[in-house]
Length: 119
Image (cartoon, rainbow, N blue to C red; front, side, top):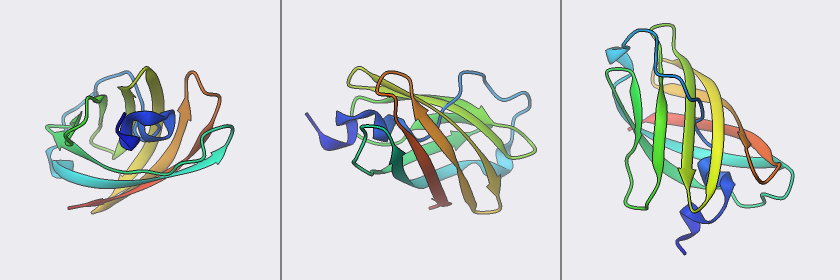
């Protein structure tokens, strides 16, 4: 199994189940995300890519991962990322070409933080 999909730490990244209230095209593009596992049984950190288009988030990699959610006009992020039987919910805030936030795993009882930079 590819390591990027292996644990909820990857899925950890962006989380949220709701679509953005308003499209936020100023945040459109590909974002390089680095995760940090801080509590629980998830000990691996990941680097992944996500895409934002009209405020909606999707996974921008080659693994079988699904990312949903979005970023609103204020830069508030709510996402959910799922893959390899794991699901992570994340929240955060975009400021310019950087973003950061927290994530938590639904199944693995672990959590952490993430940071992203627009590619």
